[in-house]
Length: 218
Image 1 (cartoon, one colour):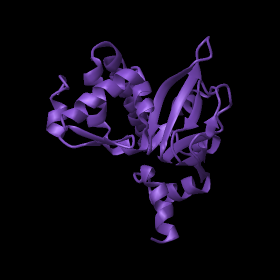
Image 2 (image 1 turned 180 degrees about the vertical axis):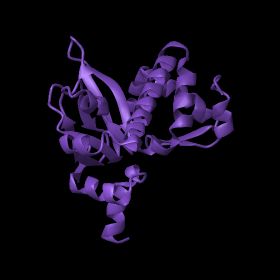
Image 3 (image 1 turned 135 degrees about the vertical axis):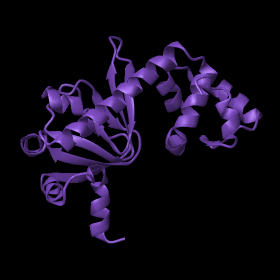
C-alpha cells in the first residue's frame, strides 16, 4: 500500500466531502498515534481540536465523590470523540484515555467551524454522530434496567463481536455494570454449553444462533 493510499484511509470518515473540501480538511488536521493507557484529554481542559478516533478504543470517564472511576462511554473507531463539547464551545466534561493502541485525527476546530460547520453535509454528519451516541445511552439504560446479567452479556457479545479480542473481561464487566465475578460465572455457563470459546482471556463466539436465544429483544 502506498503512503498516499494510507493517507486517504485516514479520512475515509469524510468521504462524502467534495475533493477540494477534503483537501482543505487535510490542511487543517493531523494524525497522532497513542499507546494504550495514554490520556487524550482531561476534564476541564479546553477543546481546541475536533477529535476523530480512526482506529482503536477509548473510554470517557470521571470520578465520583469517593474518587472511584466511573466510565461514561467506551468508543470504538471510527468515531468522533466528545464532539458536543466542540459544538457547544465548552471545556471537556470528562477524561478520555486509550484502552488500546490507537490513531486519532486532530482537526483545528476554529478553522473547521469557520469553513465547514455550515455545510449541509457536515451538519448531517454531526447529527448522525450525536444520534449514534443517543442510541448508546438508550442501550445503556436498557442494559442496566431491563436486562438480567446473562442477557446483558449475550447481547454485548453478539453485537460487539469484532472488538472482543481487544477487550479484557474485566472491561466488559465494567461496561455492562456487573461484577467481574458475575461476568465470569455467566461466561463459564456459555463456555460449558460450547456457545463460546474463552482461551487466554479472549472470547470467541462459536454458536451465534444459540447465543442469540438468550436475548429477548431479538
